[in-house]
Length: 280
Ligand code: FE2
Image (spheres, rainbow, N blue to C red):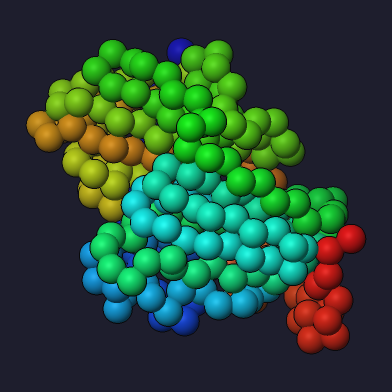
């Protein structure tokens, strides 16, 4: 068994997206700050409605998947395929934009806390132009497994033999939300060869045999190996673990379009302007 160690840290920086929603961006903060197949991780967390009320009005995507995980608050999704989804605490929305989706993501509250994550997961060239797909995953249907001094919510992939709400696919994504009590030691197998990173959104986490400290609200990229080890700090820790098979293809991104070549980006812009982002 080879335990992965903390290799590189991508701190989150304040950013603004949509019509002015304030968030923190770690992966995706620059073109270099990616971890194939993961393109971006945004955390939104505010008790001030001015930070989120404007929401994410109608906008397109092509070439990848967006995964939204709500912790607090209420957001409504609508897209040009006729899908409507209400996202509340603990709910996940898994949207495969593939050849094209136009959607909006708007807050359904005027006060209180809005908190959650949006992950962008790339698709390989052969799947970038497949039909779009959409899945709502209610909180109550996400498998939760008890571990010593903690629990793991298995949003995607498998954990300790238990399949998550989403599993398989060409990048075989693993998305766990790991909650640990103070001082808990968490050890788990993850497939060797998958690129993996951690994001500690509450408390402090110490990673690998070396127990390297992972800063709060930063993405910690892991070395290769077939196991991960996290020790929670004195106040416990809540950590996202993401792992996926690297795609190994060129990435050309222009805002919400992520393709392999510049020509494909130009095609995406032209198709969007020509109104060709319709569902099958
Ligand atoms: Fe979006």
